[in-house]
Length: 134
Length: 259
Image: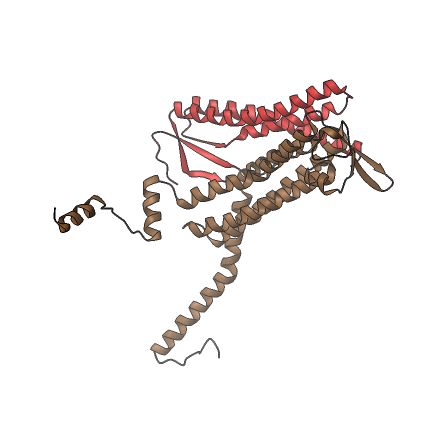
């Protein structure tokens, strides 16, 4: 792949990454909104925080425009690896915080209404007074 | 103490109760106790592991690579004549895997460690293959254990699963190739492949859920089955009932069907 095509591909992925990050924030806010409005059934994609891993793409792309000295490159590489690990941890922390938030607000997980897809699960949480049945 | 009473006492002390269940009873008891269907639990847990096993393997390769090349490890792609070489920067004596300064891009060591375009692509293809090898048997297992799954569910789910694995791998492969063409950090392409692969896989699931692709495919398979084998079965049943009626009522057998 030549450099122009590579920039074009990563450019498209940059846009996708921005949307992915926006989606994570929007989903988090939407869950809060649903809890405030006492919606009876809340369905969320489990570990949706993993979308935020895409944030690495614009960073790697931006770094490729500059030439870095060895010392700086060393720290940049470390920061990138640290960021990758942080984003992974963030996804799991976000998931546990959502579960705690839902549980505190009086919601319970309903397996019968949850749907297992190929790579992820769409978990359904019901208000405590609603029985879990299909 | 007599021998008889001593034996009796020993038997009493060692009394154990053994309950014998049939497989179906055992599964029923387990489902009643936990409130979960066994197929759901087995399928979901195993699938979760299957989906992320390739990402874990990739992460393991990346860790090995960092261990060998260091955080600052750089690999540069160079074309000499018609051959592609991977040139490793830094002191080769400090490395344990890549002990030379340059390797052919097709060298097994380079390909195994997912360096460069060929290496990253190989890692993605083998990851996708592994996911397929695990996901398909798990779908079949889920179908066998579940009471509520039909053959159309199995075929529809497996077809969309394979399509999703293929699309996610292709997108990750293109992204990794693009990163390999631009960045000189050796772990760059594999990190991009992990990030893009996971995000694409999740996005495909979300799209499938929103558009109902799997459900539509299962419905279409159900309808196709009903219109072919189902219709054929109904016609046969109708013929059988007519023949039975003719035999019971002394009417000419086969009249209206064969002549």
